[in-house]
Amino acid sequence: MKRIHKVAVLGAGTMGARIAAHFANAGVPSYLFDIVPPDADGPARNKIAAAGLEAAKKSKPAAFFDPSLARLVTIGNFEDDLKRLAEVDWIIEAVVENLDLKRALLKKVEACRLLRPIARAPGHDRKLRGRPQAARRS
Ligand SMILES: NC(=O)c1ccc[n+]([C@@H]2O[C@H](COP(=O)([O-])OP(=O)(O)OC[C@H]3O[C@@H](n4cnc5c(N)ncnc54)[C@H](O)[C@@H]3O)[C@@H](O)[C@H]2O)c1
Image (cartoon, rainbow, N blue to C red; front, side, top):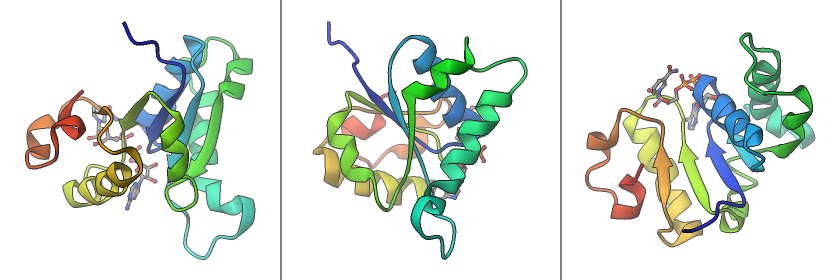
């Protein structure tokens, strides 16, 4: 059985940030990436992922079993950090519900990953027909 040492979650919204929190609860470190806000520079380029992580830290009921587990989540963005996907064992896609945006993002991911498994937030697999098989796994 393959061990999961590190994961990446694409999309730091309601689903993505909490999925990253669940991995942290299981002791698994993650990358949590989101889009870059318009005209953002420096650390502000990760502002959306940071806001998603903050929301998960403050959520009630708690997303993290213990607040200190948030240290296992490393934020980033889709423009600067996709190369980090080469480090992870599992990628979970949880971006906004727009098929064209999802396909465009997965295309970039495939370029970084050469078709290692990608999982998606539940409920949309049929819409991804036409993507390579690895991108349709959940
Ligand atoms: N929330 C739920 O209960 C739920 C349940 C099942 C499945 N889902 C699915 O999970 C996915 C994420 O849902 P959510 O509720 O977390 O949504 P959300 O709106 O909370 O988060 C979506 C994230 O996508 C990011 N985003 C915005 N524009 C983008 C772009 N152009 N490219 C890439 N990312 C962009 C946003 O910044 C945001 O952080 C959707 O496909 C949704 O249908 C959600």
